[in-house]
Length: 191
Image 1 (tube, helix red, strand yellow):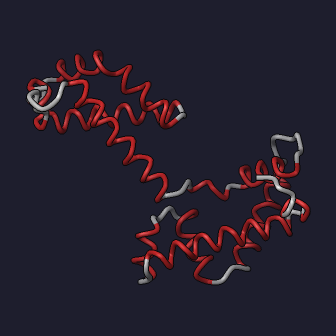
Image 2 (cartoon, helix red, strand yellow):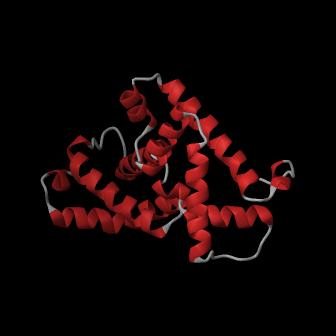
């Protein structure tokens, strides 16, 4: 780690050869997707490179240090994902997949016409929400802002923004059940 702290690239390669598989397996268990796992492993080793001077062999073994950095990075990554929901959350493909799953249908891909219809339905549903709920949902899901950022933009308490998001999403699910043409699903016990 002293060599890594001294910007010795060969030392970083040695560190990767020694711990790369362990970091990869840990990240894969937490993140699931191969591309996210690959990104996380690279980011962990960049962190190790940048924080190498903080490693104290008298306080922890090297494997403990590597796993501590890995754990912290994965937690940070999961928190960022929770605060910045997937921008594709309202993507028509996902909406169609959710509607198909709820209705028990077996079709996996919607036609272009069905996608356009889903998009139009979403826009109608968003327009039916109270202004605060609509604004919070649009900024969080479509523009990628964190709830804390939205609270600052709107000069509103964070709790108010969280409540508006929760109520708005619940109302969208309710409207999807009504406009989606399957009112029976609302009380049918399906998740």
